[in-house]
Image (cartoon, rainbow over the protein chains, first blue to last red):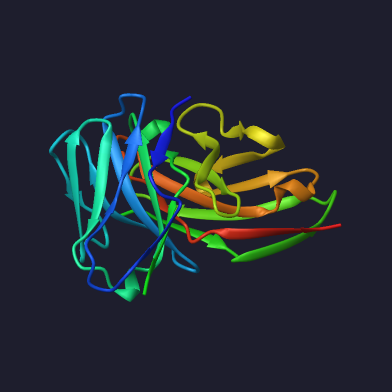
Length: 112
Length: 113
């Protein structure tokens, strides 16, 4: 089975800190995605990537950036964390549209 | 652009009762449709998907869903609820040929004894 691993389950960071969320997948998937999940809002796409060094903005990219230096790793960066970025962050990977996604377990980030 | 509407943010059923979670979508081209389940403090797990072919699809844990093009619906059902089915369920759509999914806002399924 494809495995998507997010490095941290829970994180607490201070306002203004630079935050890195790491995601690694082990099945050679081309596509990787970052979503944030908030109660009542469902999942919202932040950034995605179709290949190494490629990135595309999703629906809510403001305040975030990403890095994909290797195929298996997709990092989400909060340049200067703010309290409104407190959320559950979900990473996913896929082969293509008809296959759906495989998700990691999520990182619950609290910014204080 | 595609969109997904899940009717009801919370659905309550008794153990042994029918589960029906509703999903309607809009898509300008034939869609691929998915249902995911999320247990507390976990990521999403694929329950089932429709891509082409048979419109009634069966998934894990006894769930199934039927693609109805005329109604633009993809409702999720299970004949008999179990306590372990209590979770949040998400419907998702992508136009065929694209890889980004658009998710509904989720429906929390509550199962009482």
